Image 1 (spheres, one colour):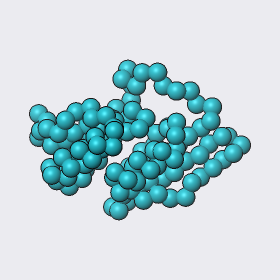
Image 2 (spheres, rainbow, N blue to C red):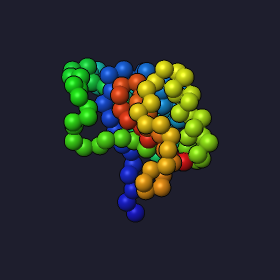
Image 3 (cartoon, one colour):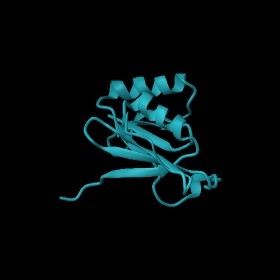
Image 4 (tube, rainbow, N blue to C red):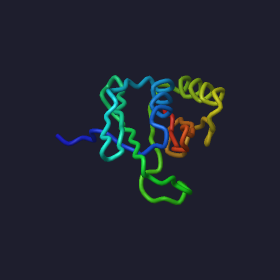
Length: 128
């Protein structure tokens, strides 16, 4: 049986990003991995159900200039279980000073979602 094991992305501030995903999405965090020879560090973050993301940092990576024109993955969607929870979490994230890219709404294909920006500008869809 095939399945996606995890999705990974590069970050500037590993600890800030770890804290964000743990605080707002209740993810658990594995041990910090470090390879000092390559200047590489990472964490695996997991939901209770086992879905995982890996956040990675490398000391010699350059900062992206404009994410909106890059090809490839465009967002991460996280299901929180209900319309009410989408609204509550969106407001909590807003109150903590993070940018709301798209207000809670029903999309044309029937999803109820909002879109927020994580601390490094990655778009996160919060869905039912």
